[in-house]
Length: 105
Image 1 (tube, rainbow, N blue to C red):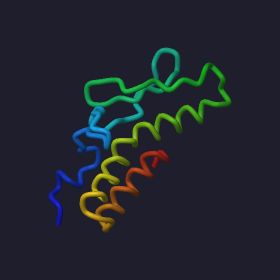
Image 2: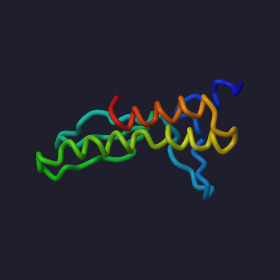
Image 3: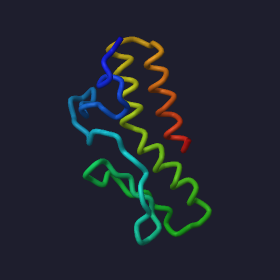
Image 4: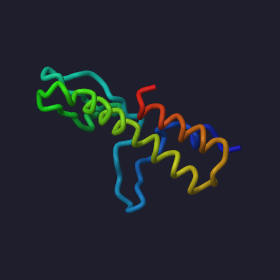
């Protein structure tokens, strides 16, 4: 059984397959800024701001984009886990949790 640090969502060190680093998770689709744009944040850093260009009809799309972006470290963690350990029940739990986060559940 893998240790809990290996299976914790967003616990990746930030190493990508190209050896580049990204801000470790978890990331959250956080508050709206003063212009009504959704901010995606890590623990101590703003990852991005999702804009809807003041068009109300695409506000739901902006929210979905922010959720998808915020789930990226969790998705990376699940895939990295599968690469190291194979596809098992832990992988599926991680992957389904990442999908739920991306879907706003």
